[in-house]
Amino acid sequence: MLLALDTGNSNLVAGLMDDNGNVVRETRTATGELLTKDGAEKALEIFAEFSVSGCILCSVVPSADEPLIQAVKDQFCVEVLRVGPDLDTGLTFNVKDPYTIGQDLIAGAVGAVSLYGAPAIIFDLGTASTCCLVGKGSVYEGHLIYPGIRTGLDAQAAHCAKLPDIDLVPPESFVGKTTLDAMNSGALYSNASMIDGLTRRARRELHDSNITPVLTGGFAKLIAPLCEESVHFEEDLIPKGLFVLFEKNRTH
Image (cartoon, rainbow, N blue to C red; front, side, top):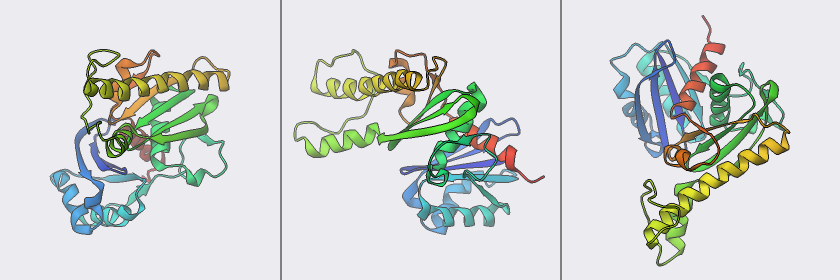
């Protein structure tokens, strides 16, 4: 089985995948707990009963990489494949420096193209939200990075005396009838409208009406139903991309 590791700014998402690329077990660990080998080993304990034959890692937190890689080697006796543009990705990179692209962006783009083909626009709604554009011929045209929903809410609560921290829930209406409802609707509908707007703009920029929007990340499930565009929600987009990358680059 393949151990697919996605280290984000807030959490490590570790998924065990079968030979068909399905996630059979998954766990989340706060990224801050991975900074020591003991912490990294504890994060992977849930997979101890399984036979892990390979591992692939995408990470945007370099300080967590070495403890995690060492924990994988010690517990499962396998090498860790690192995501990067030097792998066989199936993509062509039309950017100034492919090595500055977040590894999670590459994995998400590969996952989206494997599921829906190109062209596609991929939104990953995390601590920092991202939007990457893959054009015809699987050309990675570039990406946008903007503050994530939770990041924006935290900043709003910190700087606005009468606006508290809230947990997001499916909105009852487009406009809120209370302050809390207004904050909830504002956060969700504004991001849904951003996704709609960026999708339409991408179609104009590339002169291609067939660009498919794909959503993933922590808040994507809440936002996808609010979009006016027909979007595809893929909870396991990154693991699926990691599975494709591992299969393309594994040494038999």
